[in-house]
Image (cartoon, rainbow, N blue to C red; front, top):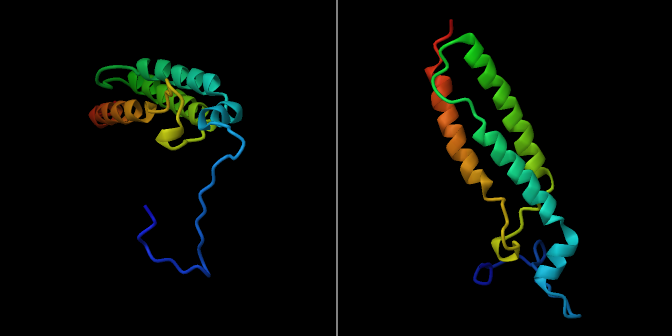
Length: 121
């Protein structure tokens, strides 16, 4: 990607490395990060997303419940991404659950609609 871009070698040098003793990318990733724990955290996040209060926020109680859920969502998201190394796709293990950001975008779009519907009491 950078091969055809002129660089000022006095300021920038890009090196690409490979293990020389036979280690695979998969083995290095598996040793460096606990993807079962990362997957577990994303699963917990999915449960919080699924628990989002549905419907219009027509009462103060509904708004308070929704606000509480927003706090839970934020905490669960932070817990999910805290240990995720956000590796390039080529290095991700099979079953990687970190694409949950797509589900989060959809949920936050729906949550925004709910918030906009709140008229106050």
